[in-house]
Length: 236
Image 1 (cartoon, rainbow, N blue to C red):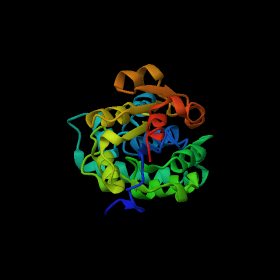
Image 2: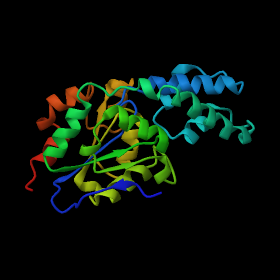
Image 3: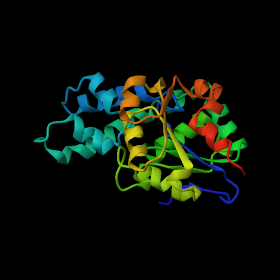
């Protein structure tokens, strides 16, 4: 399925791509708990700390990273399905971080294309978008369904860039996971890290972030001095 997009790109100064889980929506630890429960349902005892480290990867990569290489891989699909079912029970309780919608609005108002570039399933992304309540500010949205490989591969970011018709050189990516930073680095795209998903500033900087903020509100308060501010300063 092609990523959702709308609007001409001719007037955009550039684009800002946003990860969603743990970046705009407070769901990183919800995913951690859902994975922990899914693994236990299938007789795998995986520590939550190890799971949280991998959140931000696509589900297939996460399972492969956390379970023994010699396991029966035929059961992986059932684990993924269990995680999806468990996480879906939390959809009504998902909440956007403070400043998330305002940050999208400021980028939109400044003439930048706004795109969501998430490793989430299409259904989970839809639930996150409901929590954001900012569809009028979003020009494109891509999910794991739009990419052959999930983060840290850059495929999802490439799909988002194609949807808004902006090159990587004219875009900035905002994310909370080391996998987000690595995906942006693979394209030579400036990356902004946020620690609201649970990863430290040091981890994000080591993974390739050019700058790190506490969350959407902190980034918004410092927008003009950020990599996004440089895009906003470009002529229309």
